[in-house]
Image (cartoon, rainbow, N blue to C red; front, side, top):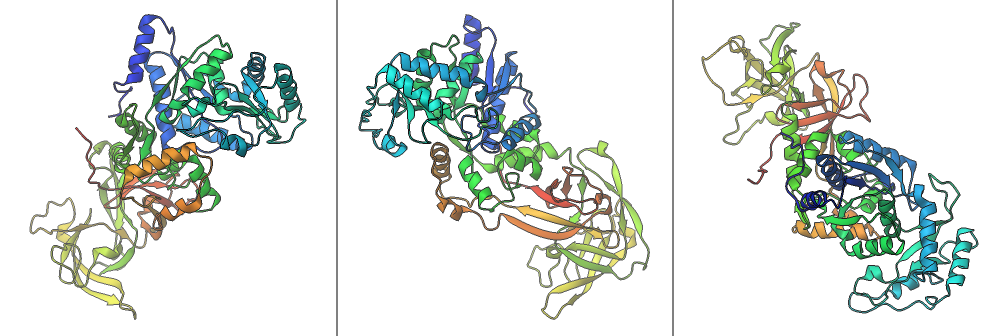
Length: 567
């Protein structure tokens, strides 16, 4: 059962203390995505933390788009983010944009200049990077660091007026180039970008950097607890510096939690974008992608995702979660919801030679044995059926209990059949099985004359509906050291440059497309309908490629897993 709130955690303790001491009257959090890509499973945890903690304490959460980089941002991403948050089950109190506050941010920048806390630098991005120093060596002061307040104000206003080219000048905070925290070594707070913004159009040609804009946004919105993932911990001193030096009335505090890393799963937005740009996947919503839209299209449910992130908890440490844990919660959520039916993914025809030609019999089958309230359905049975190719072997090993010459099996919801003969093509492939059935063994008849060890699924041939099945494996090959991947994901989130070498890690077997058959009742299945196919797993009707009468099914998760939740 889904948990209604967050487990015990350090942020909850902080909020409790703040409310009890009177430091905070009403809890206000925010989910602040950058609209430069689609949300992924890691964002699901951040959404859950911000919205659920606020709800627990009777507070509110804003959805705020940190749209400070018009070159990479698009309305498409804004719409997708809104859809994802709603689909996960959350409603924001107010929708805001960083661009709503560009005027206030500009005033803050001028205030810093007037206080001698910011200066215009003519150095290139490469020069600034080269003089920034290292973890063991201090940075070097810019030759433009001691410009006068008047000169800096004049230059900054000319930057705003569009008198300089992109990259020609930047505005930097004036803090300490020898600070052990590199984030305090005169970080850039404004850059020139002659780009049209999706909200403000061409009003601005200078844009604030995220690290400068974010604390100002939090302060303007009276955010009480600014919650972010652990890679922003080193930026907290700059966050506090901006709020103090810009003399903001509200003083929010930043708290960092461990980021969600899932095995064999990319959570670097830049790498995900590269997969899309290189056409390795079918867009941001490809069912192999860890994006919320990809998980939704594949058939994952919001309830399963919320239960998953609840189980991962909230802590200060980085960790790696097994992908099988996520799959476990999907199975748990669907096992009582999804109707159970039969599908043959790799068909092999069976002719029941002693069944009357032209006769069709309708049999009763339960829709979900674990949920009797789902009722039953009627399925056809006749002389010709399809079974799975791997449910027959000409020369089987020991303990193979499916069809082979002379063996008898039960057809689920139908009869016992016995294999008497088979047909091969010129290449030696089995193309047809000839069997006989025993009419006394009808399912539900109470027959106890003998038992069989194998039960196989099937689909009646004359009413069968052709269907496409898309079988998925993880997009990323498994690594010997999965903890190493967690570190790479974290580094990728902090680094602008993405090498294409990671494409070598792509699993070439991540997608297999099969053509098979489903029961006739599945012909009009609607997009996003979910089913459990006997022995195969849980499947979702693909909303992108399915057509009326021509269903395409995405594998959500296989039937079983060895994964066990820790006690």
